[in-house]
Structure formats: structure tokens, C-alpha cells
Length: 342
Image (tube, rainbow, N blue to C red; front, side):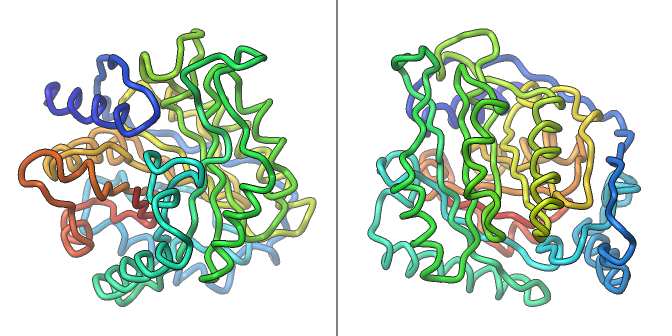
């Protein structure tokens, strides 16, 4: 198992802008005590009329799991307008400046949409009971291999590039995720700079612990991390935006493929205004991806789950193929509600 974990960790680093060495990881299966944030949301704003459908969908996502871990107990019902778990999100990931960081930078917008629509139809066929919501997942703050003027090792994408990502999304009625790689900065300094976009009903947030270098290391030389306090800051921030601007719930993606990338997961606070997805984004052979999902997503339940597929890197090792939607629907417990393609 340790060899498999190390393989996955090494793999993900090489998919990004730098290479590096990997931390040792361990697995824990302790139960989590859910804390629900205090809120001024009235009962009328919560999906009371859909609570039966919500619970039924959560049970279906467990895919027969009988351990009691899933669905997460005592989680709050979302306010009206929630996408999850009523739809499954299928996203294309990347940066428009780079062909190496994901499919968004590899093809012109029309070709991106031709390919994304193929994946959408494949997931609709694999799970006819769950409509698919397409998404554009754009890296808005990118970790760098050099310090830049302020020494923070990250580049904030110009507004014109973010606007271009929103325009691509509009072509297919997609939602948008803005992804943040803080490097030597932090979420408190980076996330509020995206507020103009996060106030839009269809724009959501993602953060990548891999490039959160709390010890001052250069991004790519080791795997970074976020503590629950970092995740709670982002979630609190999103919840406030939702309340103040009368928005539907925000979806908040947290990437993960090692144990230490997310610290103190039991302290993560859930909000009716925010839906948190822990996204397994390591690459490799199917068995390795299954192991990582089990060890770092299944064993440490937060709220919802995601799974990442790589068009190129998943093919590098035997059996040289990507996992298919039917396989993921059958094998994964719980079933992911967010699917990301790079």
C-alpha cells in the first residue's frame, strides 16, 4: 500500500509545473464529529420540501456502504438552489496559458466543448437518475517555480483571462470553478481578490493544498497542506457572500491525494450555504486510484466527494487506460458527485 501511495503522490507532482519529492503518508479511520456553523438562515430558506429527495439521493451515493461513514451524519440541509447531490458536476480543468496544466489550455473553446459534451453524455448514460451539470474549472492563481517580486511563488491570472474562462463556460451553460494555488501566500490574501467573481451565482471556489507551502519551501519540492482552519476560512467567507448577496449555495472543492494534505479534517465546519467536495486528484493505474480514494477520501468523510481523471497521465502505466464512468459508479463508495478531467 505504501508503494502505491508514493506512486500516486509522485504522479500528481509531475502533472503540474514542477517536480519534487514526496512526503510519507499514513491513513486513519477515526470517525469525524460534525460541527455545523451557527447561521441566521430561516427555516423557509432551507430545502424543507426537498429534504426527502435530498436524503434519498445521499443514501444512493453511498453505493451500498454499511459502515456508517456515509452519508455524513448530521450535515445541514443546504439552502434553496443547491446543485448537490441532485446533479453530478463534470468539469474540464486547466489554465488558458498552459497546455501542460490541463485540457482547457490544449484546445480552442469549440473543441473543448465538443469533448466535454462527450463526457457529459457518458455520465448521463452511466447514471440516468442524476442530471449532469457541466463545469469549467480554471486555475486562477498558479504556483510558480520562481519567487516573483513579492517572493510568494505564485501568479494571479489577469482579469481578462478569468473573463475568458467565464465566456467559455457560457457557451455550454456551465458553472465555473476558480482554483487557487497559494504557494507561499495564503488563502486569506488570495481568495478575497476573487470576490467580484465569487459574487456571481454560477462561480464557485477550489483550493489546492499541494501548493500551499506553509514551511516556505519552493512549490514542487514537497507536497503542501491545508489545515481545517484554512478550509474553514474559505467556507466561512463563501457562506457570508451567499448570505449577503442572496446567492444559491457555493460549491467548494478541496483537492487531496495524500494523508497530510488536509490536516485536522474533523474540525471542518459545515454550512447550509456551502457544499464541500473532497476531490481525489492523483493519477495512475486504476488500482492505485481506487486505493487513494479509499485511504484519503472514503476514510475521512467531510461532506461530498470528487474524482479526477487524466487523459494522458492515467495511461502511462499498465493497463494504460482511464477508468470509465460505469466502473466508477460500480466501484466507488461513496459515488463522487464531482468528476474532473485534466
